[in-house]
Length: 179
Image 1: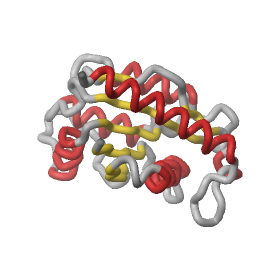
Image 2: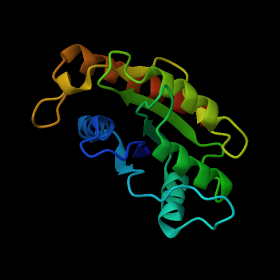
Image 3: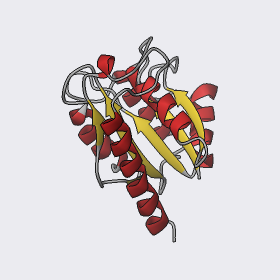
Image 4: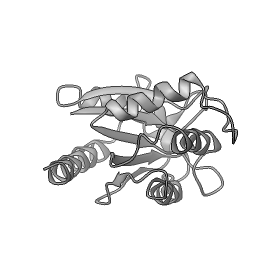
């Protein structure tokens, strides 16, 4: 399965990007990952044609079998950089239509960006998107600064075990919706 792993953060030292990199490495023998980010994309401007880098992201989404989004949380919602990228994509190329999407998140706060996941799911099922959203177990990792070692590996064995379980559920769901 070809997975586009998209970080919704534009922060330097993003924990969500670190999480996606860990996931890609952890499952590298099982899935084909392309890890990318919304960092550097211009803010959405209505009435303007989508820039080339946004169209390139749309193509990556279209070419992927599944999109894995790591959604940080700002002000109890998705980041402005992720929302802007999604606005470009929903107004120009519509690559999420019928696309299987899985959401993960991590945060320095104990809740693990739970509210951003809920908001993102609502966005991705709205008109202009029409994504197929995974709604099984949720992967929300709190206290992010304590979760990674100096090499970017997750330090808690229980977290890695749950991540394995989570992806087992994702794989079962993916097989079911793509029959």
